[in-house]
Amino acid sequence: MKTKYTREELRHLVLQQAQGPEIAGITGYLEIRLYEYLTAKIKERQDRLKYLVSDHNGLVSYWAHPDLDYRGLTPGCHNCLEGKITHIRHSTKCTQSCMFCYYFGQKMPPMAKNQYEVSNATKLFTLEELKIVFDKQGSSVDAIGWLYKEPLMEMDKMKPVMQYLAKLGHFQYLYTNGVFATPENLVKLHHWGLNEIRFNLSATQFSEKVIKNLAAAGRLFEWVVIEIPMYEQVYDDFIDNKDAILETGLTHMNLAELQLNVNTWNHYDGDPVILYRHRFGNLSPVTSREFVYDIIELAEKEMWPVVINDCSNDTKYYRDLVPDPPFPGVTTYEPKMGVPSETFYWIIDNILEDEVEIF
Image (tube, rainbow, N blue to C red; front, side, top):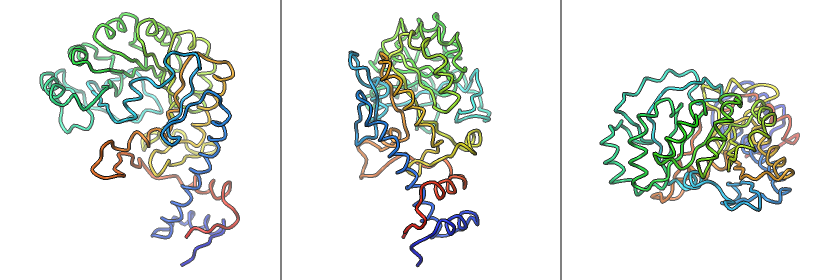
């Protein structure tokens, strides 16, 4: 069996879209080489940061101003990492149509007023059923997230559940694009028992109105977060609005490595953007995490009074390792789609030696 390949031989195999065990081994080798290359570049940047904290074999990293009382991730993030969360979905409505949204282009059937979904469950629940579920099984989770589309479009439906979960003592966090996160609605959420709120400012192109809503949240909640997927346009918008954001009183920034799927990958593919598949799982632009560290380096230079979470594919790989599994290696971290052929050409031309030993 052939064990060594030149660049030209590898390009020919990719071009011909060859099939079989040989090409599977070759493409797997190429993907691992790319991941190692990208990881080494990020590690160099991490090593230059004085206030970066890395845990769990380097898979979880965040930057924090040294004088903060809460130098760490939010309770929502911490429990997410340890697999001690569940999510509630109660609406399929949204005000936006974001190019990065996992559900871009999909038409979702509406949910009835008396229906709720709990992550990983196979059925919908009524309000009374949901109460029974958390009465009996709620001890298995430490935090509950409200997400999917725009939760605040149907706030009345959230109220009885959020109040009940707060009565049981559950930590609750919520994602929003911020359009309906008005001062009046934020007061309601605070009274109902919400603990942590996360604004995706990129959903509204960093709207001035939404940044003002973020500031209102900063006066109410202990944990106030912006969570944004990182790519060039978002980076540019963030820099343009940096001072206004830092004046809001937010506590954390979750800068997420952009994850793509069949609905979104072609919005970002092509020169100069190359996509890679992290550990054969999440598909992302190779530049996404570089933008994260552009911001973190600026934060350290200017000493921003926040915690910045490098919410990378490494972090999600760690998160998806199932806690207390029946045997080691059980994970929910799975591929969303394959890698475009342009990625393999880029690896061959930019990373590989003239000849490589693969097998």
